[in-house]
Length: 359
Image (cartoon, rainbow, N blue to C red):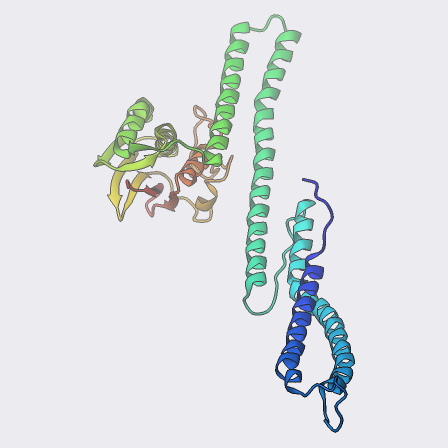
C-alpha cells in the first residue's frame, strides 16, 4: 500500500543518540549549577573582597557550557550517524536480498558472517526461507511442465484419431469411438488427480476422527477384483487405528497405496499386505508388496509427480497417470505425517505412513 515518505531508520537512530547525549549533557550542567554555583557567594550587591563569587563564575561558566553543549550535539549527530550505519548494515543486506527475491531471483543468499545476534538470526531465517521458496518454485515448474506434457499427449492422440476418421470414412467408427473413450478417460483421470493433488497441497483439510483400519478394509474391498484378476493375494491386518483428518483424502491415500502395490507386483502369485496399528502415539499404515527388486536410488524419487518407476513391472492394461505416490505424499504432508519408502530385500516395496494419533 502507498505510504507517505518519512525519516529513515538511520536518521531516527542518529537523532535519538544525539538527543540522548544532549539531554545527558544538559542534566550534567544542571547538576553543576544546582550543587556547585548555588553555594558560591553572590556579588550582585557590589560586595568587594569576595573572590571567587557567583557573578564571575556564571560569566565564565555559561559560555563554556554553551560550547560544550554544541560540541555534544555535533558529536552525538556524527557519532550516532556512524554507529547507526554500522548497526544497520546487516539490515541493508537483508533488504537488498529481499528486493532481489521480489524480482524473482531466489538463488541469492545473504550468508552473514559474525557472531549470533538478532540481525544474523534474521538473515539465517531469511536464507532458509529463500531456500524453501526456491525448492518449491522449482518443484512447481517441473510439475507444470510435466502436467502440460501429460495433458497434451491424450489431446494429441484424440486429434489424431479424429483426423484419421475424417480422412478415412470407411474406417470402423466403433473402434475410433472406443479408442477415443479410453484416451478421454485417461485425460479425465489425470485432471482429477491434478485437482486432488492441488487440494491436498493447500493443506486445508477438514479434521474428523477417522479409523484407518476401516479405511484400509474399504480400500482393499474396492481393489479386490483387480487383485483377483492379477492373481494377487490381498490381506488386511491390524486393529483399530484412529487419527484426525479427512476421511475422503485418507481413503484416497490408502487406495493409491494398495493399487500401487497390486499393479507393481509379480505377474501372478504375489501378495499385498496392509497393516494398521497405533505405535508411539502415532497411527501407522504399512503397505507391503512383493515384486522385482528395486534400485535403492530409484525409491526416493517415486513420490515425485509423474515418476512412474520405469524400472518397475508394468502392464499395458494399466497405464496410470504417474501421480499415485505423489498424491499420497501430498496427503500425508497435509495431515502432518511422514511417508517412508523402503525396498524389500526379496523384491517389492514397503511403504510406511505415520500420522498423528488421536488426541
